[in-house]
Length: 214
Image (tube, rainbow, N blue to C red; front, side, top):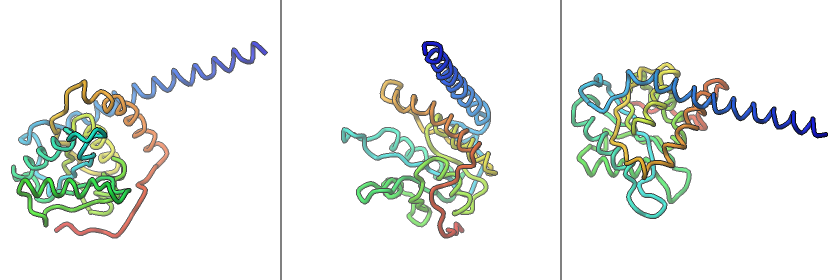
């Protein structure tokens, strides 16, 4: 009995070590592959008709403003006003009646002078994978500039390029390491999940009718 328990322990220990190695490899690989395509400088980005602004909550659980949200808005506005893009797809979670990331982003962009007819809403961007694949399959975009923080853009650009898109990332300003510690830790697992989704051919949760962007 003791030998069986010992073997079971060894088996789970090996699984744990293998999991740690996989997570480390996935993070290194995604960062390396996406690095040439993401930038904090608009001048380093190509011209593309459309940007994809990835959603997040407007406020934190404690009710305070979410710096990730507002920094993404500022970056999207900067990109639009630079002339590098003509349209913005705002993609996020709208799974509850009282929670609507795309509309929150749309209103914020309009407050900064971006016309409503230049903004397209994707209400089914529940995950990064959903957002980037739907930008191609639903909105018909094969070349795109993704707007989010660098850690997020690395994964989004990687997923987009793995799905046949010419994708680039414009990095919004990050938040300080202390405030973003939980988010950054979660990202390590998210990058591993990105590879897992590719290996098993995971697709977006929802499809839908095609949306024409002029």
